[in-house]
Image (tube, rainbow, N blue to C red; front, side, top):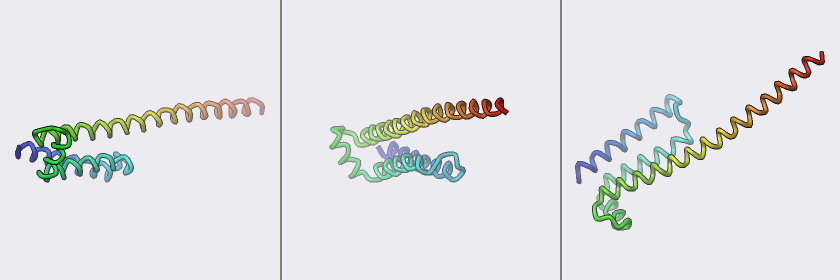
Length: 116
């Protein structure tokens, strides 16, 4: 059990450092990094607090604390992935609308140029 919790601690610290480095290098925007930082902190707190982990395991009906931690990590990452899917979908729609507006403007500019 301790080995799994130590691995989860290292993974959460690694995720935290990776996200901070990505924000620093402008690979990820700050508002999108908050979800990842929250997930990393939640995993770190749960992997270092056996009493809280036991409480979460009891709440979930799981007899083994580290299994509850892995289940929670999976659920948190699913929520983060869903959030980013929604953001990507809205950006794609905005990109299509912007492309259409640019095409209309180019058409009007070309029509004005032909009139002269």
